[in-house]
Length: 329
Image 1 (spheres, one colour):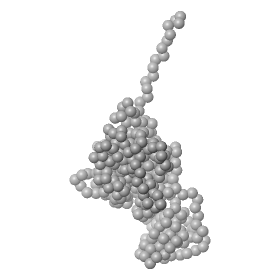
Image 2 (tube, rainbow, N blue to C red):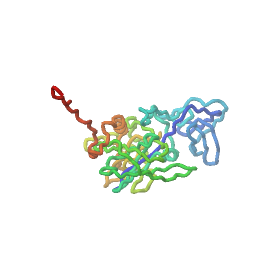
Image 3 (tube, helix red, strand yellow):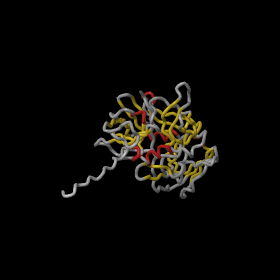
């Protein structure tokens, strides 16, 4: 039994300024502001502060170079921010447990995002199958689908660490189930291996802020093919299935993708991929991040109990009556 999975990572940036600001005007009336590192016959490499973008020559109308400080961030014709030195993804920590976007991140190329987010996406293994997952903080807490680990306690997580520009595969076998919500198909796990490092993590975006037709992409292990990237559009935000609302997407979702992240073009997680319609194509579904954030904010109520592993709710011990001593003792 294969399950779904996904991963991606967002770079946090603290005040970074460029010595020289160059402006690249694009055909769609947008602009990219940063420092040009290299110019080739078919592309231009520009440092925008938090990453380096490679812009095809065919998309460029003009290039302006200056020695002055970078001007304010530009806005695309469609009203969405573009990747400039000033338009950096801004994130905030929620109770020091997960990271959520304060402002929408500028749209970027899927290729660049996949390279940066790859370490945050994992493969979740159980004796009965596999799925996907993603880290929500650097302490080893990760999200997957409940159906990926349902009925299992022997869980391992395969992580892809970046070493010298290469991805090195490492398997962690000390994995604890922290909280589960079987009704919304979510599970919170934690890697507890003694040699576990700090992990790369994702930033949670808002599924409510998505627009129908907006491009999204998923990362996971469909049919066990790890680190597979599929791209599509958001078909609808309100597809009701069995009384629950899901995001519907044309990004290909297959067994093995379960539990992986669905990203917007800002590199923010907007959903957890968890199912598809088997007799159709381009009919994939994801759990909205609003449901995920509710689950994480109330994780104590969903705490996993070894005494009752099938129950997504954690009940406190009932109070006992105080025993009164007989008179005279």
